[in-house]
Length: 512
Image (cartoon, rainbow, N blue to C red; front, side, top):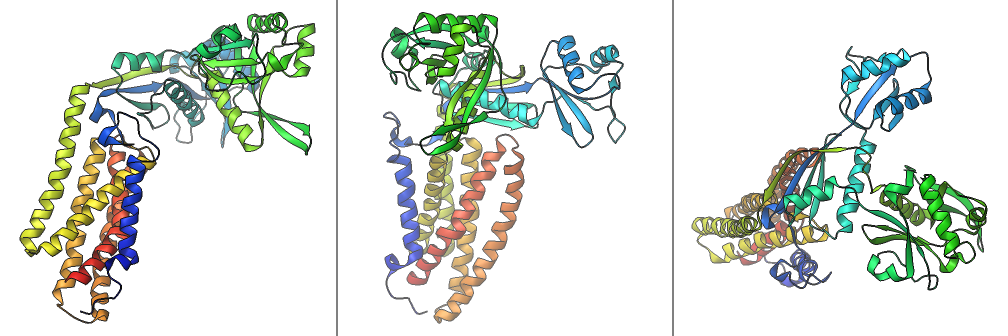
């Protein structure tokens, strides 16, 4: 077989592997800078089964029902149900009419009894069954998830994953957190507080500051649980004018009750915000961290001199960035209470010492898998010049997978480690196919060598495609922890097909 000129380091396939491995090591150990105590872990993150922690299985309480009634309209139905059931009711339209989302669990018997008050009944599905489900809408589920994520992120807990199963089930893994703390964080509402700047100048209060940094220059106005009556579900916008013409100003709408509106007006007047709003900003804090701060609008200041204001909009800026900030602020405003009650239907805890053992065992298992398959290959070929490139090809894939995990902040858990071992197993099969095709024809022309390599890659592509299709079912359906196994397997196969396998084929071409 005729060898190509330029050497291995001049080949683009070999260089691609080297550069990708180098980039993976950088994202793991160099940039972004890992924590000071990270050690060999670098920027890799581990799930609770490798470092210890808690897992909570939550059921989001709610009811979806479609109602038949001719005596009242949609808004009257909502008002009636909210009064009778003492909870929020949200209507939404589907193909067959209006579905009412009741944000608490209600039995069918209770619903039928309540509906007698408006001469109503539960509508039927096309199948003939009652349209009555113990569930919530996906929008409510996603809103609940965002609020829980906000509460967790405010506490600086990076090693957390939240998975949703169906429309009303949620699984939360909190690495390094004991079960009691985990229950408190998820079950208890966050503390939302509004304060007003008493001295200093505009800009002294910025997002992200802790209460201890601003306490001496601000005064308490109200807690959200006591003063905020409702929060809008979506950002609002209005047209404003600036030096460059008109622009769309986004904001987060919320309403205050009598107590909150009075407290805000009295504080604004007492501390001079109505006369000098620039130096007396209104600051909002969630769990003692500033999430918003801005002067009260001049128009609102004039209204406060005359009386209380119940409905407010916290302006967040223009264009998509302003809309994004408004959406985040709405979540913060609602973080004092979840849109629906949550019931902890299951929980589990992995002690830290047990997680450390699992982590050590997973590392040993991965190394044994790599060494074992290399040993089997050596028994087959008895050629170190074949075995060593194969070992480094497999090792490179492991590094690439870990680099990928560091980039997307994926938490490595036991299923993920199992996925890496599975990638090693399928990888060595494919490398053996390439090696056998190269060796089977002996030394030959470059044209014949290319044909054998193409034949080998044809087999590899078919094998990898079937595996990827099978793994996609697990990855897309989010079946608990199996999703990590599926994603790691898919990513490893793709790295192998497009990066390491071509480079290995080039190395074999040169050394055989």
